[in-house]
Image 1: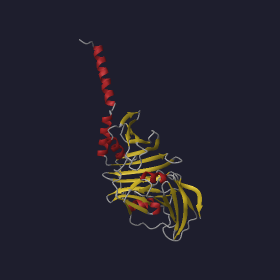
Image 2: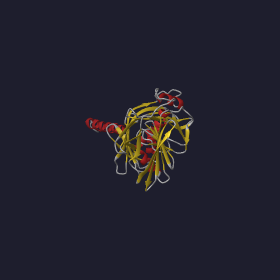
Image 3: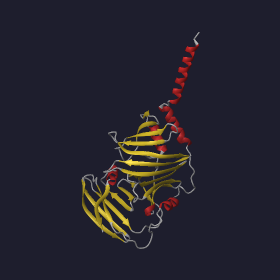
Image 4: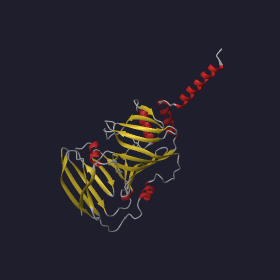
Length: 342
């Protein structure tokens, strides 16, 4: 017969092993739970802080994410600087749109966004990247389950990996680090809040509602305005080209600057600012992709051109020689050159 003391010892060890096994989730367990969470998800709201180190200086901006099942999304991006406007990526029953309320502009994309590439601020996209990567690495710390996976950025091969952190208690994302080929964190996404299954109003994902709610009340929409000055913007990364010509064009209600670069690869940058914001019109249809340029601006990328709005100005970068990736890199480096056109 087994003595009582030994029996209790064996039972105690068994209970401890059982409790330890229950508390330690395997990679398969976590992936399964994440998949179930996304499948059962009615919607969520998240507030995200994104930090990017892709340019000359660190850039920080905020993202508010709303999602309603099945495929309704509202992603509002804004710079942490007070003088910068915001843009909204909107997906509803009518399609995919990028809105710039400050300029009363909207683009409609022929796109399957957000399913066509990795989206570090969308819960579903992060889980999908994990499920699709058979070589995903799994670790954990005191509070998080951590996955290292491949990314799917069609227009940027320089950010091949990401580290994704999920809270151990509710399996919601807490942080994402996007890594370059050397393993350096170029982009850091922190989820400051994450609300599951919130309530939404009927018009939360409609164009008119979002344009109206985000447009400053004192924004001029008619009459004669005067642009006191227009700061000249120019790329730091010129892909080996040099500025050979810059022309200022007076418009009926603003100014346009056309900068021509020639060298290893030629391109043209058009910068425009209007003193009167036009009334809201139908969205301009774009046959291209949505790209996040990293300074609170969203661009419309086609094979030969990239267009974006920033700080009340419109930019159009065109080249039949730059690759799509180079177009993005040049656009991301556009900044004030300390020169003004009066």
